[in-house]
Image (cartoon, rainbow, N blue to C red; front, side):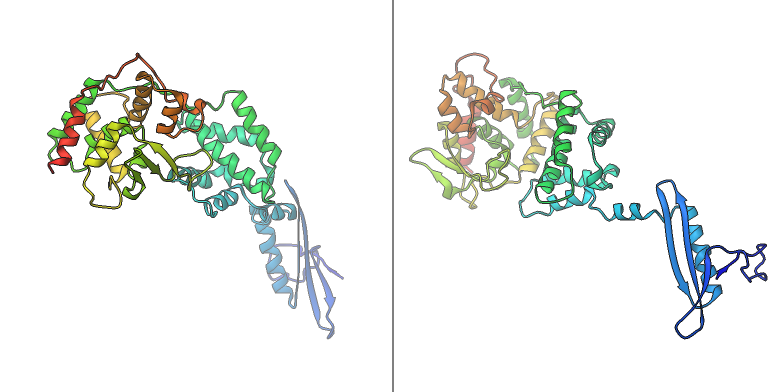
Length: 378
C-alpha cells in the first residue's frame, strides 16, 4: 500500500496519508517495512533513488534529505555518475608524468600546469576540437606567446595520444585533427629561429663585469668561451667527464645529448676543436667532471652580468649559435660541423647557422689566452 502525503507540514500529522514516495510492505517476519522510491527530472536526465526502512520516521527523514540533495544538485543522474567514474584528462597526464620514461624538468613543469588546469578535470572521452581550441585560448589569454602555448599543447596532445595507444578512453583521431586545425589556423606558432650573435665588444663588456665582481665564484668567462669553441649546450658542458675524453683524436663523449624523442641514453661522440681541447686540458682534475658546476647557477650568473652592462636579448645559448656559425665562416664542411655540434641532419643544423662573412673573428682573441693562463696558474 502507498502511504499518502500529509495534508500539512506539521510534524504532528505524521500519518503520511498523502505521501506518494513511501510504500508500506510486510517483511518476512510480518513486521512493517517502509520503502522510499524517488524519481525526479533533472537537467541532465532523471535522478532515481530508493531505500527501505523499518520505521516510518527513518524513511521520511531519508526521503527529505534525498530531495534536498537533488534540489542542491548533490545527487546527479545515473549517467552523470557513470561519467564521473571515467578517466579524466588530468589522470592521463599524471600517468605520463609518473611513467617509467624520465621526462626533463621543463616537461614536468608543463605537465604540472596542465594537470591543475580546470579544463583538464573532465573525462578524456568527451574532449573534441572545441575543447582543444578553448584550451589553447586559455593558455594564450594568460599572456603566453603562441610559441609557448604550442609547447604546452604539444605536451598535452602527445600525452593523450600515448594514453590512447595504451587503451585509455581518449579520442585519438580527434586529438590529431584538433592539433592540425590549431596549426593550420595559426592559433599556435613555431618558435622563431634566433639570429642573435654576440659581438666581440659585448663579450668584452660581460667578461670585464665578471672580473670586476669579486664575489663571483663560478667561472662564467671560462664556460662562455668553451661554449663558443665547443658548440655545446650549457647542461652538456657540465656533464662532460674526464674518462670520456679522447685527447689523441680530439674527441669527447657527450652523454644524454638533447634529442626530440630520446630523453636519456643519447650518448654521442663529438669532435673538439683545438681551442676547446686547450681549455679542457688546462682545467684542474678535482672531480670526475671536467666542469663540476651547476648549469643553472652559471646561466643565472651570465644573465646577471649581461644585464649589469645593459646588453639586450643575449642568452648563453646564443654562444652555441655563435660557435656553429663560426665554423661555417672558417669554411668548415657540413660533415665536420655536424660532427662537432652533434646534429644528425642538416635541417636541424640550419636553425643554428647565421653566417655573416668568411674568416675567424676570434683569431688571436686575448680572452682565450686569459682562460688558459688563469687555470694553469691557479
